[in-house]
Length: 378
Image 1 (cartoon, one colour):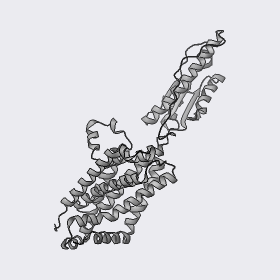
Image 2 (spheres, rainbow, N blue to C red):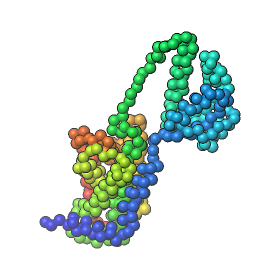
Image 3 (cartoon, rainbow, N blue to C red):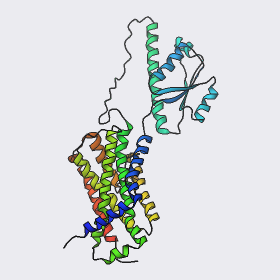
Image 4 (cartoon, rainbow, N blue to C red):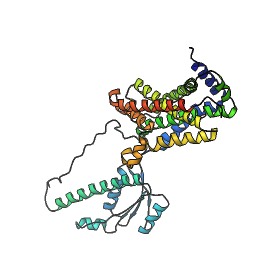
């Protein structure tokens, strides 16, 4: 028996070509999302804004401040004449860290007495605050060691033994520059793919129901699975084109490395696209109008892909019951595949479990769509 799937797919292709809004959404929205999220989301900490009250105004205090500016992590944005004003700089957002150097700083150092330096950290952004506080602690610790060595020399010891330290030489694999974009772009590919496939297919059945052409389709001898498969073929092709386009921009424009197999990338993308298409198609068969379908698609695609996939927050840090939910989120597995292929040159033997789960989710979603769609009116 001749399959009617190509005819259904051709019909859907014609509809997409004639509807310029669908074309803009299919190819314009991924670019907008990539540019906005690719450059806006970053975990890099550079040029931390520093406000300073230097009550000592000595060569020793100037040397201390020079340590901060020469580190490459801090930029002094303001000097003030009182401790009280430091808090104002944090309040208005001019500074992320405020530091007060006491008036007797150099005098106490020359006497080998303790020195208290007050540091205020803006904790509104906890991640940035922790990193910035770590930089401050490291600089002050190095300064303390240097003063200790100078004191030992002042006692007449010409060649004092070095203070024992752990010489930590940390080498980063897979993302040696610790660039946020290398970590974020693969996650964006997964998010964009899920959003696009779910949104586009969520409008297919429900739109035909609204315009009244679904009854004509139902009255034909075409089978349910032929309708479902025929309708997702055009959007599957669009999803694959989008993923390749976003990956090329990420590699060629944003400088994200691609170390793995192209065929493995395309295979994982195909499975993930089918899972996203299944979600969108299931929404389309259940929703009564396009507005509801669009809202359901956004809630079931973008939010899980962002929050429950490990893209922004590590899954292992989530509560146990939330971790259990992530097992039904396709982006969780696709994200591992993408980062493995882009950054680690991973092979199939390293990713077979993720491919297995993606395949299972894909099969479950498509079977559910076929079973839930009834060839009848009402």
